Length: 209
Image (cartoon, rainbow, N blue to C red):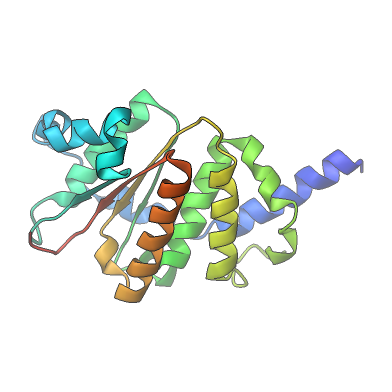
């Protein structure tokens, strides 16, 4: 096996270890919007401002959506995420599931999912795995992934974006622990302030405005 083939093989092992059962279960189970019921957001001033590069200093890449439980926020998130995918392939997402298994409702699962999507959509970023392959697991169950390792890999991948932009959609963030939320938001804000290229649309469920 050549050096290039060995590198590719090791990267694939790491990629496989990032995946987990039901990684897309919550997104798949959310009902699609009926008709044009969610189209109003596409014309909302805050959403338009979020998409406008010149307005970046005002919002710093973050758009938060708050609302009462059962108001249809996850349906709204699925709608705008689907629309964003139609316009660009640099979209990644994670839909927290409070009723799901551990990785479905933790930032560890979120980082694994977001990192996997990012590396699949931008294969050149997979080079960040070359120095971290020792953290993968051969049986692909991902039990050895530690949150700090995932954060470092995610940070390294974001740093290599160059002029490319990524839109990140995170649904029902409040369904994981408060300490995990604070740590994750701080990390996203640091990416945005340093790079100015990482757009994150964060949606908080079950919180009233």
